[in-house]
Image (tube, rainbow over all chains, first blue to last red; front, side, top):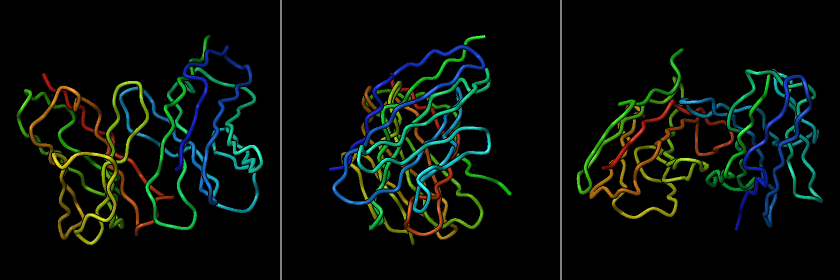
Amino acid sequence: AQSVTQLDSQVPVFEEAPVELRCNYSSSVSVYLFWYVQYPNQGLQLLLKYLSGSTLVESINGFEAEFNKSQTSFHLRKPSVHISDTAEYFCAVTFKTSYDKVIFGPGTSLSVIP
Amino acid sequence: DAGVTQSPTHLIKTRGQQVTLRCSPKSGHDTVSWYQQALGQGPQFIFQYYEEEERQRGNFPDRFSGHQFPNYSSELNVNALLLGDSALYLCASSWGLAQHEQYFGPGTRLTVT
């Protein structure tokens, strides 16, 4: 069965410092991988996704994530965070070969400290 | 271009009551999925509607039911509400059954007292 693990429930980081949010998944077949962001009192927004091709994917606001098949990971990174990056971040996975539901991780709360 | 819209924004119900939540998909989308997000947790898939039929279902009891209308909008109904049903209910829309291009609405916050 598919599952998603986000080991860090809360990540405090100072403004302009780098950050890495960890995501590991378990699946016996190929997967699509996603990172969603949820700002306070809002719905989910797709931050970036890996479907195929280059294992390094980037978002328009400076985040990037790298798909590592051997380690079944899809960690999210940003070299320099801003106050506006404070939010809840969810990693998610779905099967690549079937129309299956998206499985979300428990989320990581990123707090950027001025 | 309107995105995914949900109504109402907030709702307070009493245990045992029934509730209906509504969702209008993004323009051009024909598939609607519903998720339950309990406080401090990730969203949990409830079910997906396509061509007015339930196509997939997560691990939720039959108290959770839904409907999709010809204009692709959707309703989520929950009967015999329990305190544990208190959560943010998210609607997501996409084109076709593949869920790798979903757009989420702002959610409906349901509180059961």
